Length: 212
Image 1: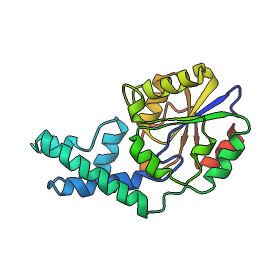
Image 2: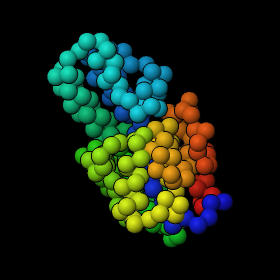
Image 3: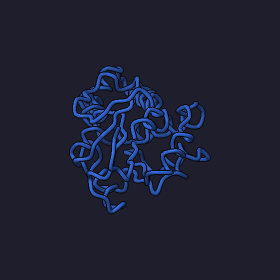
């Protein structure tokens, strides 16, 4: 049981919506058009340390200008997938409704705001949040502490008053670097990540209700 917390800072992708497989798929498709193969294992290692799949294109000698154009195409593929695939996590709104009775909550994501708003259009999840911080809203992305420190500052909260809910190694590192306790939610996409520094680990989001 976690006690003396007032604020919950949620990661978005893989915690509140199941978008991570779609982002991987969009990257694979765009890189393949440059004759660059992106395996699942390689992608997991890159994501765990906070890198980018486009490192592989640079290693292959592809110019930055070409990469920038293809990344733009990747974003289009990703948005198409978001519009057409089921990304709902079971019971998420019911869970958030219960938690909102006791805690102030926010989403801290490395997603672009454009993508975030597309993901959450008519979904009702944001209704339970005091605010949302996207990648445009802080200097350095996860695994740096900046995203979660920005969340604390917006709440005017102390780090020991908050808890972070994450599903990735780089997200956990961001929370740890910000000196905030972190709960890791099991996600098939991040099973190989190192979560040894997590305060707690749960198998699904609804277990938060008995933990908090």
